[in-house]
Length: 566
Image 1 (tube, rainbow, N blue to C red):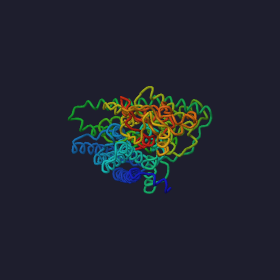
Image 2 (image 1 turned 30 degrees about the horizontal axis):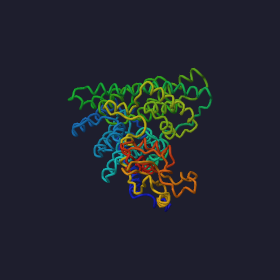
Image 3 (image 1 turned 90 degrees about the vertical axis):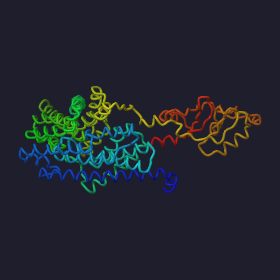
Image 4 (image 1 turned 180 degrees about the horizontal axis):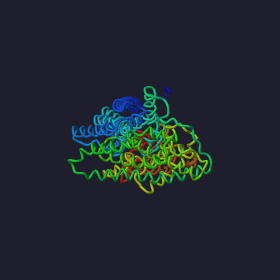
């Protein structure tokens, strides 16, 4: 351990301390915001936590209408005071910050927006609480990176750590949140990025478990779908949920586009209009208010009748789209779970009528949650683990994997953009398809190191050997002509077994033994391409040349991996 720590630079040590700090801040922020949510629910609905729906259902009609209107008035007032709308669910903004803005987010705006979002959800907005927690966690990472003047790569990763930690603490899902950060926010499962995100999520989850609760968000019976016909039904469910996911994404975007065209003076009052509609609808359908935890839990237990399983998800989609497009801040993650759970429960009820003896509808409600989550985010891996951690029901992992993969594939075919990238596309922000954008933009020039030892093609063999033996481990000797143009490399291990006849060693020169197979790279080559070149060779360094083939320096494999990490 001592040797390992001695090999870690001060910059790396500082970054890892920041990773822990971001997890701690995100965890504490989540605790504060969730306590504000519960206090708001108890204050206005005389109930809170898991009994929120009971409080809403017991409230008289005037309270069901008036309290959401109060929430809309709050959002409108704050929007007018700050001079800009608070719209958006936050996750798309975090992705934009990571990929386009070098990790820049405003911490004061994120805190204000998060607090307003939590209050709005507590007052009945049909959105998710996670939006506030992700935004504040991400913004804390951005603020720390700016304060300590971190590089763009470190800043971006720290923002992803904060957002993932916020999700982990919100739902007690450290594994799923870490993979969500990699799959959705960073768009890469690079091992070098995995460590920091995991550390932040673990720290945030520990804080949440100590100060809030340590159990799965949904406590349900242990379902098992092991019969081949049930696995076939899981695939069929994936097909249905894939179509539903595409409808969900398009519905959110269509209503947002429609409301975006509202007159400028009216746009500030759209949150009030949207929450008024929520209050009126809640007179008949109180299950639609808030983040919908109680309705989802009832569907997982199989306690929701078929009629409501069909009506509620469609009504939730309309109200969620209306509020999100109107400018009420909040998350779309939890509403998608509501949408998927109830549609999945309806599928289970219908499957039970058609094929007697199948698993209870609650099992298909759980599969529906994961399938819609994967279909809307296009992130199958994190969807499986998030649902598993939310429920703790391991026996359903196999059918869950099938339904999520099928749903993601179908949804992607029908709607190429995910719930988050579609928002960015409307802002004309284009996302690359594979590796992180900063890994493409950072050229090899940024990691260029000078060459202190080089030889001419006519250097005698004895001089070459002496210089090779004096080089540090992992470094090679490069042959250049009088104009400094690269001719080849001298690699000590490659010389073994390839030397000329011993009687000719006195007449051997560097040009006779140089290795021309060591192809140089150019300084403008992307680090992604440099990483690919290193994957094709055992060398620790590659030479870098300009357009005239003059040797500029070298780039090391270790430096490329560090850049990918930070």
